[in-house]
Each structure stands twice: as C-alpha cells, then as structure tokens.
Image (cartoon, rainbow, N blue to C red):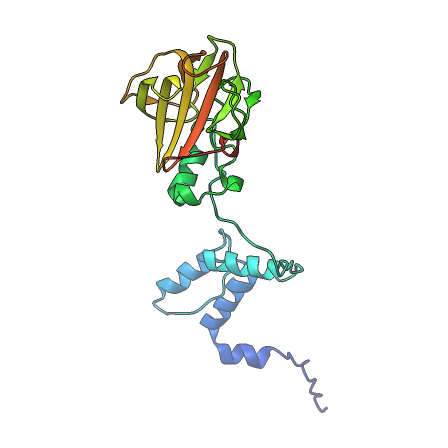
Length: 251
C-alpha cells in the first residue's frame, strides 16, 4: 500500500522568520505588542545592541512638537497682510495709572522736544486745573488792559475763581517761584526736562520753592489775579526750548 504524501499549507512568512533569527523576532514582537521599555531592557541585558521601534508613552519632544505644529499650520489658509500695511513701534502713547508721566517720558526721550508735532504731544501734559475753560486763547489778541491791538498772548487763560487749586502739569523740578516783573505776578516755572517747561501765573499764593521736585497733579499753588491781570484766572504757558507754544497742543 503506497503512502500518500500530503503537502502542508505554505506559510508565506515562514522564510522571513527563519532569516531574522530568534533575537530579531523577539524585538519585532516587543515593538508590535507594546512591550516597550521592558523588551528594550531585556535585549540590552544580553549585550546585543538592537534598534527597536517602541511606541512612545511620554510627552512630545520639542522637535516633535514643532513638527506637529508645522503640520497643523500647514492645513490653515494663509492670511496675507495688505501691501501698504505699516507697523508703528513708537511707545509715545504708553501710559499707566502707576506712572502717568510715562507717555511724556517716552516722547521726550524719543526725539528733540523742538521737533515734536502736536499729533504726538497732545495729551501728554495734565490739566493745571480740575476744570479747563478758556477765557483768552494763545496768540494775538486785543490787550485787555490797554485795549491795544496786536498783543501776543503767550499762554492760555483759564477761568478760575481766586483760591482755586493749581496742579503741576507733569513731574519736574521747580526752577522759579516768586514775583514775575513782566506782568505774571506770582509765578511758578517747572522744568520737565529736555527743554520742556510749564509756567503758572497770577497766583494768589504758592507752596513750592526753587529746587523742589513735584509730581504730576500735585497742588503747587492757588489761582489769583496778581500782576497784570483784570480778574481771577490762571495764565498757563508751555515753553519748548525757551519759546512759548500753544498749551492746547500738549493738554
């Protein structure tokens, strides 16, 4: 009786496993099954150096994170900037409640005070009175005492009853506090640095002295009608490098 030989079904992966060897098969099994670090430790203990791809269980590395972010960003539509877009890095508008003079400091440190334009200086000085109402503006006018035409008014006259508190417009040092012989009466001059000064005139009294440092908003005097004055008010000036300019460009 002749024996019949039955062919075993061929395993397509058999030859591959035979070529890899037992240790390589262990490594492949560890990577596929998620054995991870335990398999790596076991293989390292045999003294063999193998490269095994283990599934990660920790946080992404910085490089992986950057790659993931780049991949994510690549799926988003680009948002182009307009061709005429500009970026202004000027910090002259910076101001905080903790340092109300910061805007003025940035402005004065950024450029010569003589080249500052009204668009930048507007709002950098504080109001010398709690309420500002103009009685006589800066510029040429009729002299209120003589009636003469063409007098140049060097500041802004603000309405103020005698005895109204007058505030320092910004931090600075008092360079003059006394009687002004040219019509200002009791007068205070505060130097804010870099050629910027403010003056306060026709005061009934003042409580500062030369060399004293004042802060923005400090009460430095009381309004009055001393000197060449026709009634109680505050004559307020702003001087840039010794020349008067319209205070409204700074308030």
